[in-house]
Length: 213
Image (cartoon, rainbow, N blue to C red; front, side):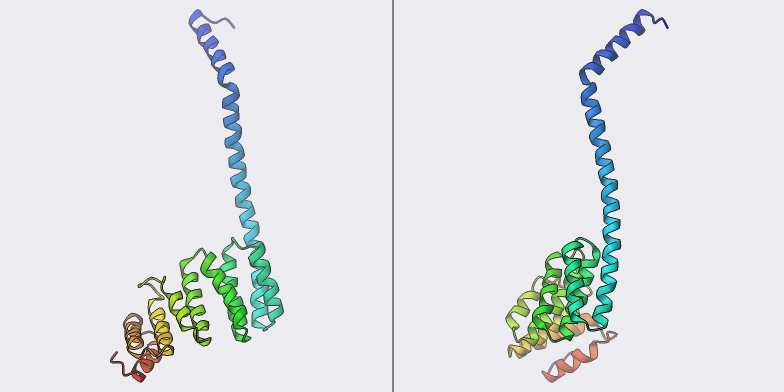
């Protein structure tokens, strides 16, 4: 096929451009294709990880329900070591902690709760873990550590009333009656009268001479 002079010049320029930049362009295209393939592979890997984690989590919950602490430790260990980046890890931590607590192994219960505080992706899980760990510290009479643990908690949100109540318990343990009374009053206000816990907190407040209503 014959080309006129102008078309031939354009073809020559295109060949020159390709000779100069062709390798670079192909490299860029290859990198992009590899990135897309890696992203798709990562998505597949995440789905596969979540599926496997779900199976182990189910085994963990069954072991916890059956109070098989040895199995709880086994399955929890697998989730933390192999599936720690999946959402099941933070759920597994709370299940394991509860199982250890029910078995009166407070030391073992503290470990997954601390893991959740340090690693959980969801704030609600971190808040729940702080609350539970503070409860264990209350049982151990480590009041200072319990109060310090609750310091990072936000002043608002679904856990605010529960934190205030727990701070009241810890302050009672320290013998700080007036501060405890204020904490319970705050808890009553934050929880509201419709909360199932309102009556319990009210009793504790009244025992200290609280005026919350």
